[in-house]
Image (cartoon, rainbow, N blue to C red; front, side, top):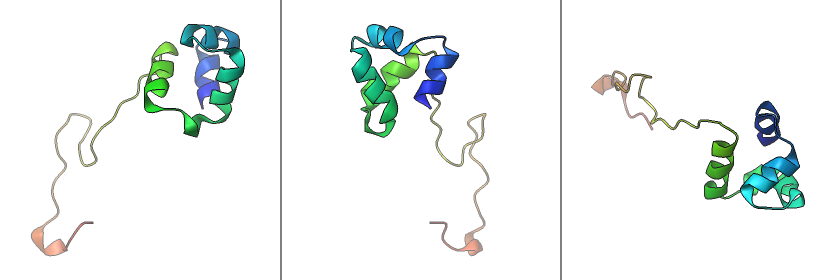
Length: 78
């Protein structure tokens, strides 16, 4: 996924690494093991690549309005 975002931004691994302040080898390892990337580093990288990450609580519509609650007799909604 990171590789796709990087390529969409028109950057090489070397250019991305330089902007992040790491070596190309370090950045390459980061792309291969994205699940090991710290939250801080991931946010920095997504920002650099021009990717917007939107977090939204479940049950909220795109307008921020909470979806209708289930009726009381529907039982628990775990």
